[in-house]
Length: 65
Image (cartoon, rainbow, N blue to C red):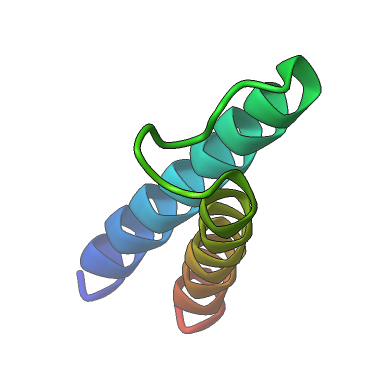
């Protein structure tokens, strides 16, 4: 019964991180801004960093089950 929250958290973090990385990659390929009103390089770097961090956190949650 204790693995349920771990599975949910791992799935949520992994899906959000993967979607963020996908969105960032799609914007980079189209040369569109990742976030409006910010520097393109800064927004790309931060989105990539946080996307990878969320995927890593999701994998860590799955590893704790």
